Length: 421
Ligand SMILES: [Fe+2]
Image (cartoon, rainbow, N blue to C red; front, side, top):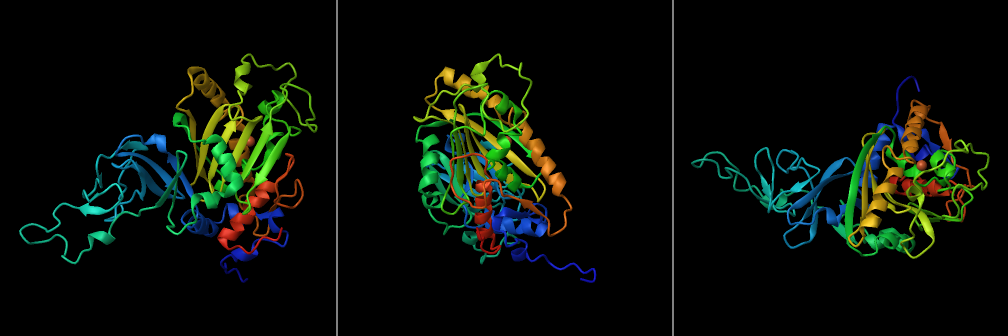
């Protein structure tokens, strides 16, 4: 190539091995990252924005991100919710700075006080007609075309989603019937309440985070706490379910015994004399009318819905360049939780988050992954053959089929050729 760098041909970076080989380029190449933002996050996807209960009063807002673009979820005067981009249509300044707040009856840019309705329509600005006939805006300036970017919004049992594409398929169709069933298993229509938040920066590509929650294989190996106290083992009764488009999934297990001696496949465990003094930490109170004690649902592109024992949370993955992301945890319960259940949710939240007994391991392992693949040659790949080569649902945990499925959907959306498997 005579030392001249040619643009990467993204369609050819995937080998004939389908999604059993994942090119390391997709975790680090800035061109590919820019295309992900455009095609996935700003394209025809439904993105998580927050919980309706986070903005109870008129004018309340929650600031969030879709991809790297800032958005505001706002409660309007009529009780409905709007989602607009947090960027003034004048000179691009950020309108709201707090993560949460109340904007009153209108949105006003702090820089030149351009003012918008809570739907983002531009209603006025200071000195519109100048002073004494001089300056200001020309009469042909069209206020109607200079509003904030207004996103399409759907709310499903208290969970708010938005899309930059106003022609996106309805949310229920986007999720499909199987994912709807498990989404509404948790979000069953009861009022929600926030139990707490955590935010952490993890220096790895956003897709490695999504992979982690589609990877039951690692959970029975990496997480010493889970294995040692019987909260998760790879021989448990389980189910891995993918949707028809393969990008969404649910991973669930039935809790049987704790601190037993089931098949650990030779995995090292903590010293046998390790015990827990507080067993409530790992004791699920089955609350959804079935025997499932762990379910992790991942919705394409970047939402994880966690229900481990009684700690419930959305985990929202915010990409921050090719090599980093922010993970935002919103721990929630229901309005009708009693004090004992609220205590249980708080106690079991110690398993999760940046310093969680379980998830502490993930952040470190994911950063090891990013460090390990950095600078790899263009043709180097990750191998995903645990559990075979397909992307189908199954009833065991020693599998990477959900990750292979994620990359089928990813290739479809990115236009990276049709996946073969
Ligand atoms: Fe994990």
